[in-house]
Image (cartoon, rainbow over all chains, first blue to last red; front, side):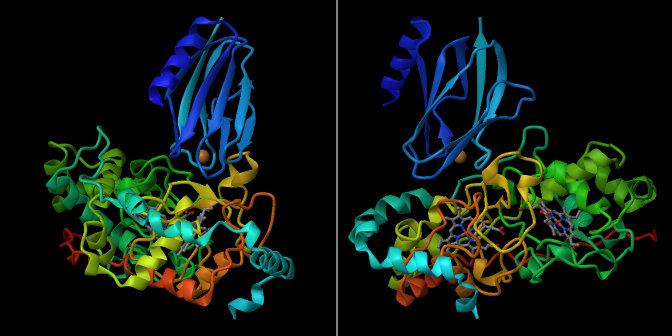
Length: 102
Length: 346
Ligand SMILES: [Cu+2]
């Protein structure tokens, strides 16, 4: 599982504009920091049996707020460069830093 | 009593759902998973400390002394221990906290058991750490109504406190920062002792009755309690609206996300049988009422209601098993002795 994830992020790192997948499992993100290029699509997959949420705690960012049902996949497109902290509002121990470059 | 606050829609929902077995998860699925669930309740081997406030015996003694000293309050008769009373599992047994001037506060006093393992502090998570939290109640007009501008100079002139601070903080005089650090260091020593449940987790099959084991299965399976009350401390450190009638906005006051309206922190369930009343507003009087509340899917259906809270269709036997399980979480915690407070009038 971990290897597959690594492989998929490696591949998406090379291929521009592809999906970068982050899994939410056991109330944790599969990564603490994710690096993206503007225009890349971030995909969050809720692999838990509880509802999660995504919202940015950094002021004035492009990131909205998303509710994620168990099993749901949530695509998020980041169009501008920048860096922001994303948390689950329900389980604030779940944190991930999103870094978007040109 | 508890039957009456079942609203009609809630009752109808529960009746329809419970009557159609196709909508229910298969009951037999609970049993084979017991061993897997048990692995998730191992006690941690150590207390976590922040790197910038490592513990020492001297710091903990100072923190304990401050925790029990009513002279930090405006009136001179309320200490942290007035509300967080070790004899009552570090709470006060009241439905709502009673503060300065005998005024009733808006929320119940939470226990401090296992607070070292917590994340955000307070029912609504507004404090980021224990250090962050400590000075709050001293100064809050409703709680201790103390004035740091007076407390710090008093501590600095009190010979006993000067010594305690000097020993704890390599010669430093008392100040707001080391005051907060000492109290937090003491609070991190408040850890639940081994309960019958922990003995069972560690492998002693005879430590808890069979009925409680069945309650454990329900807690993790059909009743879904462990979706929020997870792990050895029975909390996800998360914030949920579980459908209480209270209109306190909770964490919704500062987090602009729908699910956070009326949301409060998932409390630990350690020593829960000893800690009535229950909930942030003290609205449930006993554990039977709490279980009944969850069984009918909460009292108020609103958009923020956590989807994990829904009619459960537990039978009276199931409810009793859940109760038997919760009762195994009570530990005989170490006796706490009252510290000697440095002499000197305020
Ligand atoms: Cu979450």
